Length: 183
Length: 192
Image (cartoon, rainbow over the protein chains, first blue to last red):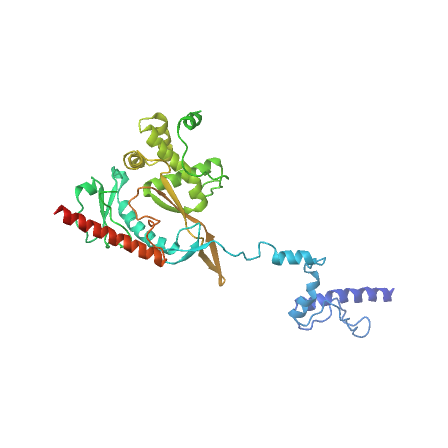
C-alpha cells in the first residue's frame, strides 16, 4: 500500500518537474509535491526526456518534427515544369525596328518612345493653356485653337480664321511645322 | 429600339472594334455592365475635353468606337436631331463640351470620311510602383495615345520625310531638285 502511493507520487513529480524547468527558467526548484522527508529515502535521478532543453535552439530543433513537412516526394516532371514551363522561358523580341528620325529601337507595332517624349512635353504645355478656362462662369471651348510660339510674328487673319490664339512661352521647335494657308 | 434605328441608317465607323469586351475596372465604381459604360463615358468625356489623352491600351481600343460613333452622329445628323442630342447629353455630362462638340469638333469633319480619331501604341513601359523591404516592385504598362484628328498639338507621327540612306536615292533627289530650280530660272528669264 505504502509502496503504491510512493510510486504515484514519483510519477506525478516526473511529469510536472520538467515542465516547470522549461517555463520557470534554469533555477533549481525543490521537487514539487515533495514531503518534508523524502518518501523514497533518496533523490531519484530524473530521466533526461525530450522535454528538458538546454537552450532555445535545442527546443526549436526538436520542435521541428511538428512543423508541416512534405508528405510525399515532389516528382521530377512537376519540379521541371515549375522551373522551366513556358511562362518562365524568355521569348526573343523579333519585331524591333529603328526609328528613322532618332534611330531609337522600338517594336514595329508602336511609335518611337524617344520621339513621343518631346511631343508629349509640348502637348502638355499647349494643353495646359487650352484648359485654362472656367466652365462654371460660362466659358467654353467654342473656338478652334491656334498655337503661337514665342518670337513669332502675328499671323495674318486668313491663317488664324477667328481661332483662339494660345501663346506659348517657348520658341517653336524645328520639328513642329508651321500652319500654312494651303493646309 | 433606338439603337436598331441608328445602326440601320448610319454608315460604318472606320475603326476596328475589339473582339473581346474588356473588363474596365476603376476604383470607386463597383464592377458591372453599367460600370463599364461609366468608365467609357469618363474616357470619352475626357478625350473630347483634351483632344489627346494617354490611356491604357485596352481602354483606348474599347473607347475609340464609342467616340467615333458620337462624332459621326454629330456629322451625319446635326445638333437638332433628337437621338443625337440624347446621346450627346449622356456621353458628355459637362454641358460646355456639347457646345465644343457641335461648334469645334464636328465642323472639322464635315466633308471627311471616318476615322475621325487616331490611336497610337507606345512601347511597353516598366514603371516603379513602390519599394518594399529593399524589394523594388515594377509594373508593366501598355499605353495607347487616343486623339481626335485636327487637334492643335504637334503630330504624333511625323510625316514621312526623305530619310533614305541609299546614296542613289540621295543623288537622285538632289538632281531632281537642281532640275526644278533650273526650270524655274528659265521660266523667270523667259517671262522677263
